Image 1 (tube, rainbow, N blue to C red):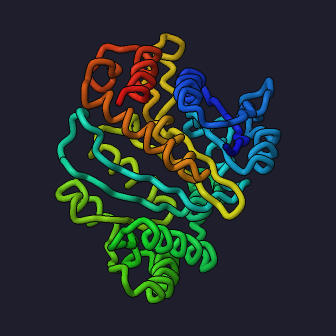
Image 2: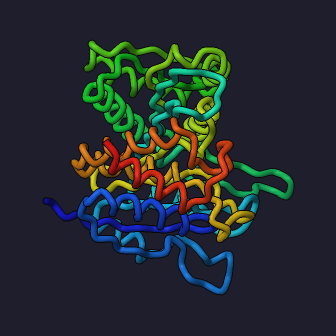
Length: 336
């Protein structure tokens, strides 16, 4: 049996609780993982200086795989986003967001089964903004052929190897003719190399309307960074929210699997958190590590707990705490 070395970044708020529950469930499967636990944010007395922990970056580079809990990002001030910094520093250019109904979780639609692929390193997230004169701020949108081409290759290769038949590229090239135009030209060049995969394009505002009217028309969405950020959360809302969807950030050298919901400081330490998003992200991690049988066992057990609806957490209408939920998943693992 192969032993894996994985960096564990518990995160903040409810992060340590959901990380511990996820780790407990993984260990119950017998999968061999040596965890290197480390903080994602640097230890500084100044909030402005509490940026990404370089030791965490080095750990992920060394182990090549990380599991990460939620981390807070300040709004309109404070330190830069650690989440964005980790992705950019490690060049985790592909954000993979599977969106699928969970049995027993109330939603407006059934049989949703989408994959969103978001470019993770540029666009308005390059962080290049400044105040030109008092009262006027300029923010630069960076789109490159290199980044657009490699995210397109990732998406089409993923579709090819996972039985996906159709990809929509999402854009606003009718207005941003140069930047989004370059993105589309790059994607079209890659799409031409995959004639068996249907390729379509959709303007982002229309895409937002279409996905909330009829999400079943979509198979995969390929998006630049900003649109991907917005639409991946929108898509999560179709199936119950960020608490029941996973996320993976994948580069050529490293991969980081994370829960993308908030840190929920109001319930931190109370044993009420739902670890489903991080657990589902760990399922993606196991698949990435080649532990597909274990990944499927956890997925089946998780769905069984939700289907039976006896030990689910409060955010999805249940009454269980995090420990009861985790124990129920472990019990389902061991039942035939």
